[in-house]
Length: 254
Image (tube, rainbow, N blue to C red):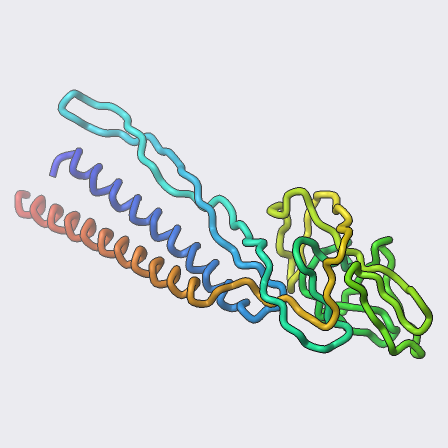
């Protein structure tokens, strides 16, 4: 086996390993999507890869030269921000957003955003998420009810009312570029972008937004990814077999 053959084998092995890394990352994202198919307000992810060019030595009849070899590098994961299906719960503290927008909640690390409108009251009467984070109104204040308030309604524009009259308005915001949002925990997002208040009738009381994950689509993607990984494995095995036979032949000549 001459030097050109060795380089061909090495490059084939490197390309196969690159493809396996892509397949592994894709499988991780698909698995996370499937695991969250029943998570309220979850947005499915898709991995994005970018081309990475490496110049390698190639020995040809015309002499020694460098040629570009294309690899794939994991760049980022993008979120599908399309709306999930809305389901009726009848719970007065369940709220869904129709269209774009995010609820604003307070956390120890600062304001965070969510599409998960499964809210409730804590021991002090604050409106909170399932993790106990206070839900904020459009002025950035916590929403608190007294023990005497029971007839709580939330209008389509987010205005909250009770027996005591109009109380607050839910802080629903959007962003110029939603892809800057990063997941930071259970249904929470963060971003450095300034929030933009959302006006209009976008809030539905007694409803929740389901995940926008389509199980059948994810299963098809998983099967395709597994096949791609298997094809790369077969190519790796073929390269290893070629190398092993070459070493054996060299050993026979010694």
